[in-house]
Length: 60
Image 1 (cartoon, rainbow, N blue to C red):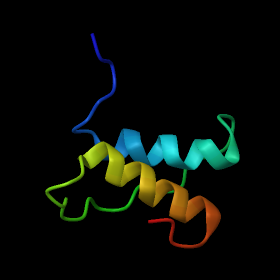
Image 2 (image 1 turned 90 degrees about the vertical axis):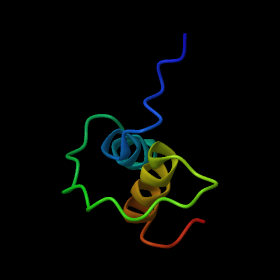
Image 3 (image 1 turned 120 degrees about the vertical axis):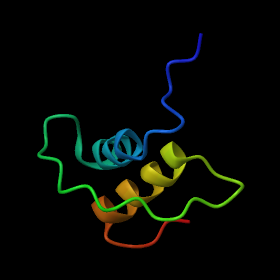
């Protein structure tokens, strides 16, 4: 059984943010979900945007 929420953008954003800053940091406001390309899931897009917000530059 897979527990990754592939359709949950907010969960992906939180994972991306916490990957850089750690689990005990405040999460910034989650941005509105953008349009999802055919080749990605909302979760993956959230991870990318969370990483970009945490690092301060574009990652993908």
